[in-house]
Image (cartoon, rainbow, N blue to C red; front, side):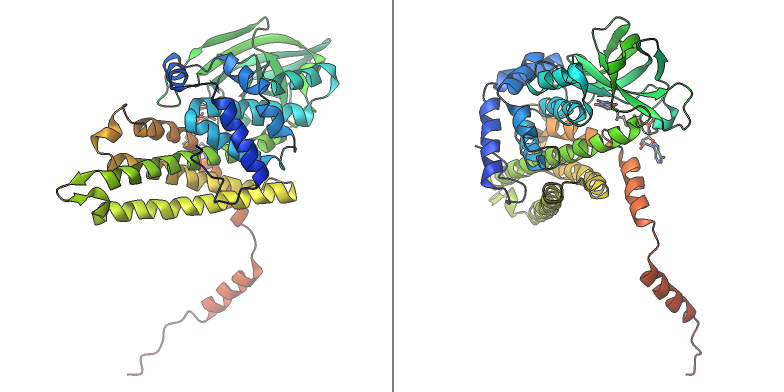
Length: 405
Ligand SMILES: Cc1cc2nc3c(=O)[nH]c(=O)nc-3n(C[C@H](O)[C@H](O)[C@H](O)COP(=O)(O)OP(=O)(O)OC[C@H]3O[C@@H](n4cnc5c(N)ncnc54)[C@H](O)[C@@H]3O)c2cc1C
């Protein structure tokens, strides 16, 4: 049974059918697998291979990037239900690695790589963040230098999801002597290439199913390691990030919905004295407020999905705003659900503590709350003549009144 009947109940039969297929593909794995991924802190490559072979990524991409967004959302919700670590890995594979190759891939080698990625034979990850930071790419140190026959790529990328089980990393690098700090480019770097070292992994708070590591490289690459045109990598990465952000929203909303339904079911069953805890107004109203918040998020997600599908574009400011609010709201909803469970919520015997840990990444990865808030602010910090006129008129009459009493 799917826990998510579409986003805000607006799902077409076609997407519902895709959802059903994703569920079928995921049935190849069970609780023991999910647990072992969390314990090993890696998603085995074979899992992506199995999903690719079953057609997950091909079906996601059948209708193209934007028009396939309803399938992306369904895919994220279903995978997130079984493993948020796997959802992170699948999202990186599908939306960033395949997304980049679909959009920019040309030439025999890049096209072959795309086919391999769609079938899950090649697993990709994405490297933008560096030890000096991830929010500002202007200070990026990784450099690409043109050499005879290709490129020399030198640098270090940190906090890279699934770098431990990926075959390729898509590296964002600055060009030698750039005209602008934003002159970045995207490169395909095989992780088994001479000069590439995986330095190790970070022990993180949540999402234990997916490793997060650091990679250092000083590698000579062929000319076709460059993806797309050089100097426009930042624009490419920013566009690809829209899909990743929307996918994160779908996962967050799915996790919050699951946590809330669990909490309501528990509150209806657990009694204290003669009352169910669902009858305690303090609990009842908190759960109601969470449900109201969740419906708003689901409705907004449905709107954004609709825009992407109908207009064939990603509404970047709307997506940033949803991720900003969904991150905070989902963390709060999951926290409330945990509270309703009492000590059980804090225990690993129940999934609330895992949801709680996993959801927190969303406020950092794919653009921090602060970076997204800046982006939303840049969209509203614009001229607005009718309201500027209104302020002028109000200001003109903003005088003290004579007291004639
Ligand atoms: C589990 C995990 C997985 C990740 N996976 C990947 C991945 O696959 N690939 C990848 O490239 N990166 C990945 N990251 C890195 C992630 O994208 C970065 O953590 C994020 O971009 C923030 O960068 P930072 O951690 O260096 O923080 P910093 O850039 O050092 O920022 C620190 C704080 O300052 C705030 N800040 C920064 N600039 C401003 C500003 N101008 N105004 C106000 N506040 C500001 C930030 O919002 C943040 O709160 C991952 C991180 C984690 C934890």
